[in-house]
Length: 409
Image (cartoon, rainbow, N blue to C red; front, side):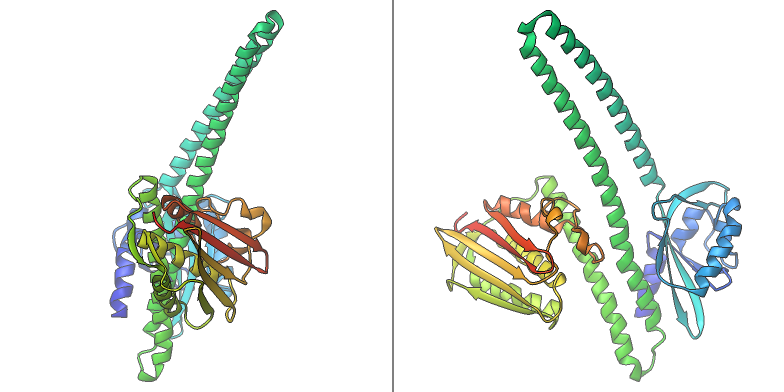
């Protein structure tokens, strides 16, 4: 079963995967890798990896490869620089590359994950051209407006209102430019984040699937189970990422609206927390306190479920094992209060104003996996239900989120 899983991942992956030995000789290449480099299915096998590198860089790459063999470790290549690969036709194209390795029966193989980013680079270049063109137009227009305003102010003080109107136009144009820059940055962050967040669990799945084959004996069951759990965790991560993307897309298109039903909120929260306990293991103590038992509400059940899972999952993710996470509910003036308190890493003060923005992640959690979409989606769901969300946080001391919702939508 695991060999079939590995084969399916290898054969049908939409990212190039090449396996080579310590001498740099290619031993396996998946169909997608052969396709992007312009080779037939088995044509790359037996060739040195340098055949995929532009001629002027090959000698230098041999030294880099030898250094990597001496100290193999998972790493990404090309951060903040442009990497080019060579097709069979002699054409070059931009790529992103990640390296890892594994050993089977004393035979080490280097795994290269290769992503063709031609379309992304083309889009980035086009966005840069459009931005520069817009900046030029804004500068030109600003100069024209300034000259006109100066002339009007000298000749007729009665035209002061027109001057102010033109200034507003200038401010609006500058605002448009800032929004365009923000959009460019947002798209770039999305492409970079999506590429990284998908590649990491896929690499984990591929490595674990390969290593499982090393433990065929009955007494190796604990080792096999460890890699099975790694695969399951990676699949859950991929599923969560896809759910975030789908939810954001539906929200952006206005396809999601609040659909309230009548249910007991307290029992629903208890059930949700029990499910989270099973998913998170025994590393945290989830304490639930209800000021009012059997609290009945008329609200969107699935949106509340998403809010609970997101906020409590964040509390678990950003808190050390063994700490307590408090979940509290209350009712005051027909307003339901849901509070989640942890004693985790907290949120730096400088990052707090950006917390609900799309793809934003605080500086002190960049080493942990995440899309930066969860809290943005939570905020949108709360708004759709007519509520509000607030938080207090101190770095290295913890964070408390409070969601306020009408009892009756």
